[in-house]
Image 1 (cartoon, chains in turn yellow, purple, blue, red):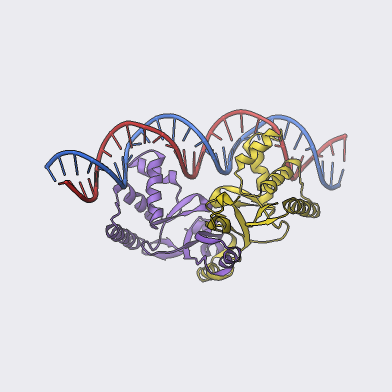
Image 2 (cartoon, each protein chain N blue to C red):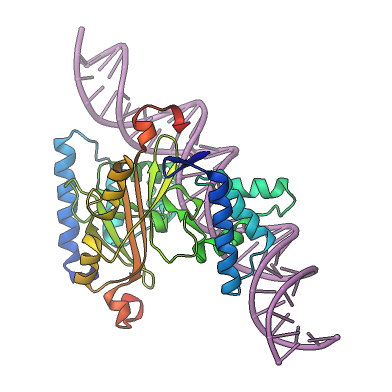
Length: 162
Length: 162
DNA sequence: TTGATAAATGTAACTCTATAACATATCAAC
DNA sequence: GTTGATATGTTATAGAGTTACATTTATCAA
């Protein structure tokens, strides 16, 4: 068990499910889910938190799967481009998607105390941002929505969201 | 005349107004609006677009106002902390606030073609993000809201938003 | 007005994040 | 199997941001 979206859950099965979903998606879309790409996604899924590219690279290096930055960045580009992982701009870090394969605009809740990250849905076309876009004639193609604050565990004083 | 929020406006007067507002605010709050801080804000206001810290630093260096990164970053920290400028996470860049002094949560519309940036208002506590936060027990303290797409000028094919 | 304290700046060195460029290998499809 | 596209390996470098410490400048109280 581990924390996801600030709640406990069966992490091993959620990891298997995500990998399976990505495999299915790649097969259906004729994408190459190569060993490096797979391993980077596994690392992100296993840690279940936002990780810097160089932190991921360290793990790859230990496993002999490539030691230079472009190896990690290229795998991450692939994962992000196809929606299997997301970049958290505010942290310059990456996190596995909690529902890969589905088309969605993610929004994140980032705990400033324990760095846990929960993924929610955003609808940039709605709300004030969408209205502002329509008013100015701007067409939204992508959106970064990241909230910073305290997760429920840290609010209650749980040390480092154990 | 220049573009702001994708529209033409009297840029010189908007710059004067913003500087005046910041001066008033600093006097009222006993903040030191020092030459470096003032100059960085002027640079941001004059260019009227998102600028990287090193781009700003180059200008400072040319003027003999400091040549090392901390000089620019410290001034930018001051401006951002007091709401006189904002950081665009997606661009790792900074932009002058269009209504300094007022307490607000900014949202940005970023043109991927010409890099023009318009500032809108966000209300992170409302909408889907706010609901997700309430549901999970997360308390939002700050939010990054940035939309990427095409500004009206670039949609119409105006070359580089001239 | 001077002396203590805090705030701001100058500077060097460094860390972290990310990309360019080019060679090599592997895959996919005819 | 040859060819063209896609992916990987590797070197070097660019860009963004911080740490640490010395020095200066402002603030304020005695």
